[in-house]
Figure 1: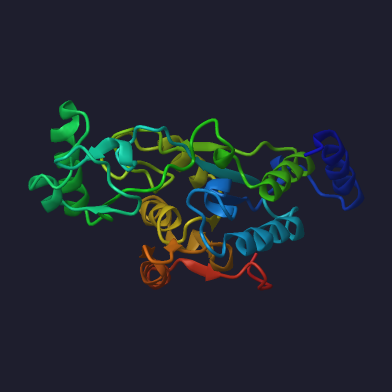
Figure 2: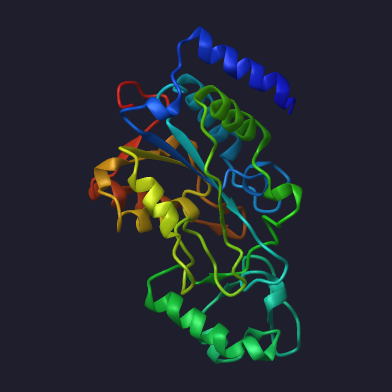
Length: 287
């Protein structure tokens, strides 16, 4: 991206349209962008979510239309390494073979030796982990394709989203508050607020989101990282302060392997029943 050119355009736009600096906002609005990264959003990348390209087009259009109303953008970055509990390298069967992508690992699988930790020193932790997932009502351990690898192109924001975030930062004179998540090797971390099991909760992010009058959520995937972020946020923010941009998120669907459409729709319905605002980016009058 030609940053200098875009910076001049953003500053000029703000002057032309009398867009005030974000620090002067009396009604503070946060846009929480969950994992709008190439790994999930660009066809041909590791864990592409069908629907994500159109979601991101609508998302970028929404930000440009509402530039003056959005105080700050908070993008999360799913961040992984080769050796993590949800990657094939972590697990082996009795013959030392690694699982295929999208293998679901149950408590019984680990107890019965169907799958064990490749590092024998990690096996008891693995058993504790899958038991904690089940006890907490979370998704069972899924072996995902290697994705969102730190330092790789897949880790970066989608170019159009990154450009939009940069434009907003210059026009509103406020930096985006990037949040790294998912780099603990022993746990999944769908939620932006913390890992599936154990680990440290991102209380700094909670405090930041509490400082806004409204928190808008968009990103990928509707069935996983968006859903669990909302679930966790409801512990700390009143539901009527949250707004789900439902046309800017899609569920994980891999033909012939997994389809989380039903789980995603059920989660959104559950959130709506609890008072969360479910809106479309193209609807008028709610922002």
